[in-house]
Every structure is written in structure tokens, then in C-alpha cells.
Length: 108
Image (cartoon, rainbow, N blue to C red; front, side, top):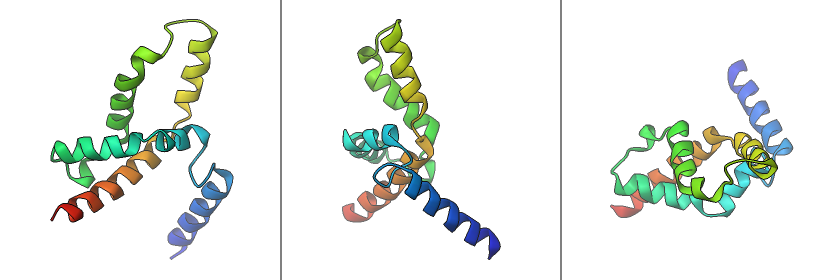
């Protein structure tokens, strides 16, 4: 019971400290720019199960998608890299799992 109470408190604090209900602005932007639906459809088309969604795989997939948009060096590259490092991929993965589960149910 105590463990559950701690998790609830941590989730509440994370939301309160976050950005529009997301961990931070950088994580929120991944959602706003419609990458979550892309990840969900990609997983659905690849017949992945929600439990197979991995945060680091989503990050790799995202980096592959935006790689050509990132300057190779200089201050802008450093600033973008700093912002990318702030994305909470575990939160993104949780949302993708939930949406994929719903997508699978809707398909039946």
C-alpha cells in the first residue's frame, strides 16, 4: 500500500511539475507534432504487442526520422542535442502502449 501511495504522489508531482500534463516541454512536443500516432501505427502495422514497445526503440525511430533535420555541428546542433536529451521516452512509450492497445481493440 505504501509503495502505491508513493507512486501516486510521484505521478502527481511529475504532472504538476511537467508541461501540459507531460514530463516537460520537449516530451510534450513529440506529442504535439503527432509522432505518437506515427509510432502507434508503425507498431500496429508491424504487429507489435503493447508490451513489446520499448522506450529506446522509439527514441531510435524518432532520431532516424529527424536526423536529416539536425545540423551536424555548431551551436544549433548542441542546443538541439540538449533538448533531445530531455525527452522522457518512458512516458512516450507508456502513451504509445496505451494507444496501441486501444488501436488493436478498435480493429476487432
